[in-house]
Amino acid sequence: MIVLRIFIFVSVLLLALIFAYYNLQGVKLVFFQYSVEMPLFLAILISFVAGFLIAFMLSEIKSLRWKRYTEKLKKGLSYMWKGYPSKAETELSKLLNNEEITPLVVNVQKALGKIPSLKTEKYKEGIAETALAEALLREDLEKSKDLLEKALGKQWKNLKARKLLRSIYFLKGEREKALELQRSIISDSEKNMRDNEKRILATLLTEVKGEESITEVEKLPPTPTSLAFLSSIQDNKRRKKSFSRAFTEGIQNEVLTILIEKNALNPEILEIAEENKKSIKKEVMALLYLSVGMYEKLEELKESLREPIKLITDLGNEKAKECGKEIALLLYLWECSACGKEFKKYSPLCSNCLEWNKLRVKGGS
Image (cartoon, rainbow, N blue to C red; front, side):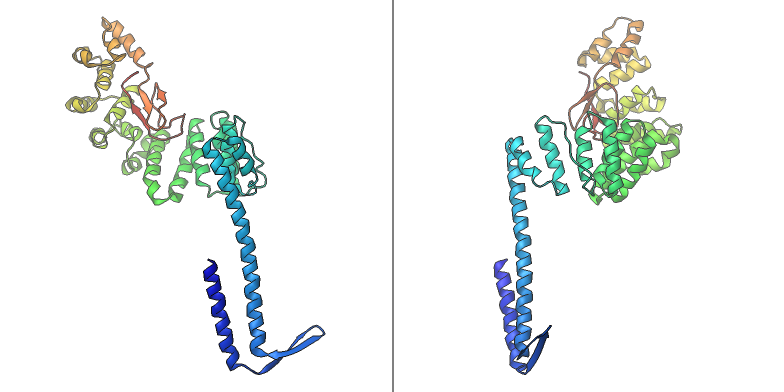
């Protein structure tokens, strides 16, 4: 960088000397009551040099500020990743005039066992509110919601705040608001993220609009929720096509288990499941047979099942098997592939890590 600056300075100087050769006549300079005569080329040269020196000095001052900022940030991050949160907090707190540092400070506050807190009034981008909302999400959903709404009031382009708020709206049952936010998220998302956001839209549409959304949902990338929904509509041809698509997408166990949970099975689904049962987990087929009273089929599977579903099939009579259906509802059949949290019932949103469409059938535990 310094070499480049020297090169520019020498080049300007050479150009000035060439200019001087052709401009030897004098010029009178007046400043208030003072006047001086000098060659024109010298006056221009002095102007060039003075301008260059002023720009150089300002650049060096700015460079020095950034150097100090970088050193403090590097030091704070080094302490943070090496496991010294107190030292990290000390260094990073010196940089809190920069809003982009606030998420790092919140992280070290959490690592120290503190309740994250920041003075958000002085910031304009909504980054501080978003960082606090994310940190407080599991402790105080309502406070997180308020912080995110404030963040978006400051800066609507804060995409992370919109995504977090969408998930909070869903958890709180405000699903119309979640759907409205999701449409805006898709339009502002980067190209490589849009497919995933469209999957979330498909899920929300089925939850919010139901049968009004069939045509739109069919055009969106599939999810377990959307295919389960489309597999239970009145149009026989369309529901058969939708359930068959679950096998193509590799989510047949999830779609079938959702249909069992919702008591939304129909003859077409049973037929396709029977034809493709080699592609379906035995535990899921057992729950299917149990839910529709196909006890003979259930007995055929019994020896190959894992606990505790096998225990349900060992119950001795039909009345006991009816109780078995209730027991099945208590099993932790679902596991989030993102965070590993187990669930008894399906939800398109993991309440633990806020990832969408990540719950998968785990076969009972």
